[in-house]
Amino acid sequence: MSYCLNPHCQEPQNIDQIELCQSCGSKLLLKSRYRALQKIGQGGFGKTFLAVDEDKPSKPQCVIKQFLPQTQGVQILQKATELFEKEAVRLDELGKHAQIPELLAHFEQDGQLYLVQEFIDGQNLAEELARKGAFNEAKIRQLLTSLLPVLKFVHSHHVIHRDIKPGNIIRRSQDEQLVLVDFGAAKLVTETALHETGTVIGSLRYAAPEQAQGKAIFASDLYSLGVTCLYLLTNVNQFELFDTSENQWVWRKYVNTEISDSLGLILDNMVQMATKRRYQSANEVWQDLAQPNLALNTQPSPPLVTQPMPLKIGSSWGYIDQTGRVIIQPQFDWADGFAGDLAAVRIGRRWGYVDRTGEVVIQPQFEGVESFSAEGIAAVRMGEQWGYIDHRGKVICKPQFNEAMGFSDGMAAIKLGNKWGYIDQTGRVVIRAHFDEVRSFAEGLAWVKMPSKWLGILQHGSQWGCIDRTGKVVKESDFDEVYDLSEGMAAYRIGDKYGYIHPTGQVVIEPQFEINSFCLVPPSFSEGLAMVRINSKWGYIDLTGQVIIQPQFTQAGSFSLGLAAVKIGSKWGYIDQQGCLAIQPQFDQAYRFADSEAPSFHKSPALGLAMVRIEDNWHYIDRTGKFVGPSWRW
Image 1 (cartoon, rainbow, N blue to C red):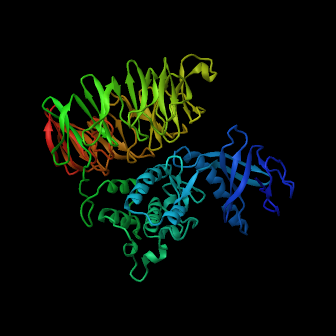
Image 2: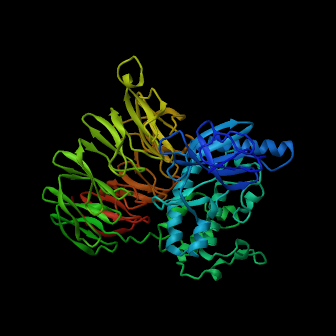
């Protein structure tokens, strides 16, 4: 079926494979390629249609958004047009993230404006609620775990979504991942604009009080996400969940499932009416989400560590729990931290994997291994070639590569001969190996070093460029080096100085920071801050390049769970994001706190703990500086 997009057509439905509407004679193909199939939504500013891209052999589905404001008045029409145009710009920037729809096209035809974007096959959470009933704690935690990094990414691009609700969160069918859609109400903000009154947009039932006054801030999105969680937990209208006479939320009396105090506190903090009492960033919510023992009106206690932690006992490696009790007996010649439910261990010269009970689930048979990625895939070496296995040990891509990187963002870099390319999760080479050097995919993009000849440039040598998932070059540069993306920013080097760029290659922070032997690779952003070296001292900058913590440290590490390791004189301690000492300098070496189950031992595989050294003894500490478990020596 073909659907006519002429808003005045009386009979818009047509048969397949025709070019002109049988009723009004309008063209049925947009840009001679996009065919609307049916209307799937309508709002105050336009209509949304399910469509197909007939220019591609597979005829993939997509979504057409037609700008058609149902309003009167020149000022309102201009504002609506401006919002529609800005949505195209936002989607082009944000759509590189795997959990945000990609913008495919933006154009005008027959006096109408159109957006074409990726179709997300799945049900939104409002539909899921109607079909399956109220969510339990596990599903709410999964929702927050999935969406908080997306919000962190969105906010790092200085965008407020302003319309987070169950209908705008889709559970994608192919991988059950949650996708945030509909950025039509989103607002691009600057530091000054945060304090200005803007247009009141968004769904009233989910909008924060300040947003209802046209003063949306980043915390407004956290409020909307919190109200979304309350609605999904109770299946009760949001207005019923708030007692206006007492000016407080009463959602707990409508919950029919057990909710932990820690999650309840997190949700209460997300929906605080006063912005100063509410979480200010997605990362703050994420930190508390990692703390099962979070209690009301107390300082956050260290999170309970549930996964085993590797530790050397005598001449062998085993695993202990958070109390220091041995739970997997020492029996391995080396033991890595857990990545998910599996950890790599070495017996003799061969590597295999054990589960959390210590049972060997993938027999030692590999000459080399990588930890399992979030996709449940690990690179392994058999003989001189690398391949990939799943978490059951099944080979999904036979050993055939000279080198192989772990999966990131659904793609993995592989080396054939002396050139690099990329494979997908089926092991199929989707971007041919012709790059001299590569970086991992993040947020839908990867930086690669390409031979100048391949770019059609006359001079010899190589040039860095940014590619999308199809291998298409979306940006070329004259940088000497480009590094992995993190939090929407990538470090780049020109000479002996480095700065930062957006994934698109737009320079955000000019190269001005020093490379030295301690930091040959420029630091990535973590929790909105990056350590930088100025005049031989280390400090921290934010995403705009502003110095937040003055350069004063001999060495420094990245932030995690609100703390960063810094060296003052000859000893290491930890500071908070205001630059204040949280743990006094006393260690000869200190690593970052783990904000997730880190896949490598040196990053500390213990959730919420950091690994430190005093003389020759290694220890785990919690965020108060308290030692956890026994010490050990390498």
